[in-house]
Length: 415
Ligand SMILES: [Zn+2]
Image 1: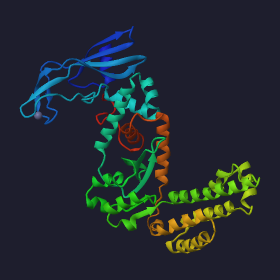
Image 2 (image 1 turned 60 degrees about the vertical axis):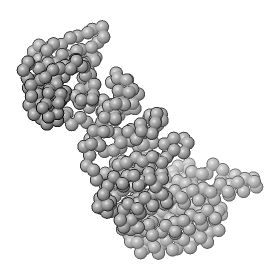
Image 3 (image 1 turned 180 degrees about the vertical axis):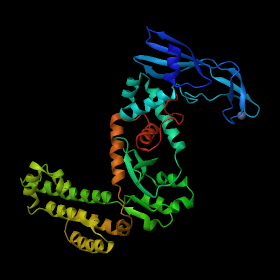
Image 4 (image 1 turned 90 degrees about the vertical axis):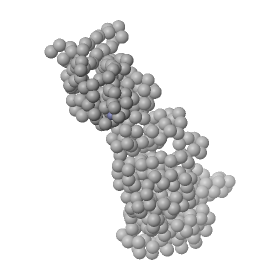
């Protein structure tokens, strides 16, 4: 097998394309593979598939391909053009690359795999391409994936907000709770941030949404009510968010009490914040020992903590009826606790109770969304911040969108 035949096989080239010559540049550590077709080959119009004679060729272009050992390998060719009576003069589709790409399908697929595993900077280094080229691969992959994706609203939706910068820049993340994928990234956390997502679908599509899990956040509530018929029976205020409000109240009680105790020289609550906020079963070793000493003390914080731990069981009930009975007892206990922040939290949950208890009809939580949130946090950390909002969006869709990112022409054995 000579080098031309070797590269024809390695590149998976098929009729009419063959390798004309292979050139090795030792100094630059590059292999150039020149690809051509026999004269009088007919090609198809890229728009209507009509078979036509090649009209002319555009100037030679090159595409980066998978390395040959340590040598960067480029495929060179002059793309033919056809003169279609209907569509005019057009460049024909090339089997090894997408029209806009400077990489072959196989290189692009490798780049996607590397980008999924490493940050953009590191991926660019490993692939020996520039940051912008790596970013281009990612952007194209997301566009390709979104074009190929079924356009439908998920049955179970999770809505969450995410701070994207140290300041107070927020995004609204909509996810498919069944697939565990991000469906949409909206700017800010206003009503329009979410309304824009629903606006892309028909009222019939929106009617098929079975449930939406989210925080008690009025702009989101309004957006869902406006778009989804029967929203009041479909909105589920998520247990994680509800517990976050209760945890915030508990921490307020602790801070106030700690301040009062320290004024009297009592340091029992110093550095105990996370002992109280963590779930009891997650405290182990020294922390558990330390915590059992304060937990039984006659402290306001200990009472607030007991309320918090008790409320966690609300979601364990088998039926809404039993949960309601539990809630009434808990609400009485909380509102008679003489702990102002806990009373505030109890009132807030009561105002939203109907859509807390819808949990028992749908049994959905934002656990999936929280999982995606921490994945997004990792993406952010790896990227050390994004140059802009649209970069952030692309990276989230790339890593969490559940999209088919690879070139569609890529089947084994083909370039
Ligand atoms: Zn045509």
